[in-house]
Image (cartoon, rainbow, N blue to C red; front, side, top):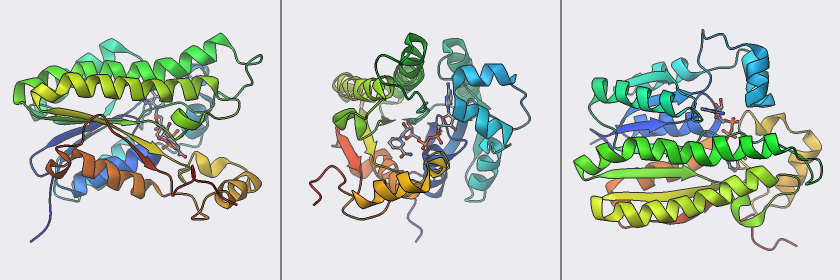
Length: 278
Ligand SMILES: NC(=O)c1ccc[n+]([C@@H]2O[C@H](COP(=O)([O-])OP(=O)(O)OC[C@H]3O[C@@H](n4cnc5c(N)ncnc54)[C@H](O)[C@@H]3O)[C@@H](O)[C@H]2O)c1
């Protein structure tokens, strides 16, 4: 018999056009869930270039290369025999989130699983060079975005008495990362948000957990120089980066009934890179 632990569940993933978000959306579909694939970027949607640069250099890069796979990911997910819908949803825009979740509720009924994955991670700059605008942008997308999306799905999860929120944080929430003050502060903030919502959600059957990926070979990380990628692999006990699918497998487990007593946890998927390596 096919093992479909999420059959009948409805999941929404943010920032799922590529990378880890895309892998999570696909894995949730393969586990039997209907999946709403959302992203700032969606095929056939012209966004003025200067606007994209306001969001992030990475967004501008992938839009320019036409490497946008929001609707294509839905098509792929549907091959697993589940329903899937692609939506343009900017996690910094409260109105956008509320109206999209409303659209989903009308078509699918309710949302059982939310994966807060959307993020910007190109705000590099030593403290004195870091602009207030970039610092605030990192918090707005990575942290406030997760807060707004969680708040928007909360009533439907409460009403059904079951819910899973999975926040994709980062190992840098614990370790910090050179020249990434906004990114690391946002990812550490996600852990506080995770624990607080975990406390609040427990009485309604909602669990909230965080996943802390290490270096994962996504399209964005593959843009690093060869030298940088080699250094990253060398300091990992496993001598390699992780795959998006390895992060996705953890998210699927956290979304399942089997993970029902895991709440407020921060789970590293790092290959042990935080351990002492000689
Ligand atoms: N790849 C890694 O090594 C790594 C390590 C630790 C944590 N993470 C975390 O994993 C997640 C995914 O990483 P990735 O490597 O796939 O990144 P990525 O940049 O490839 O993907 C991020 C996605 O978020 C979307 N996005 C950006 N701004 C948005 C907005 N305002 N609204 C909606 N969507 C928006 C982008 O369009 C993109 O599809 C992020 O939260 C990241 O911080 C990644």
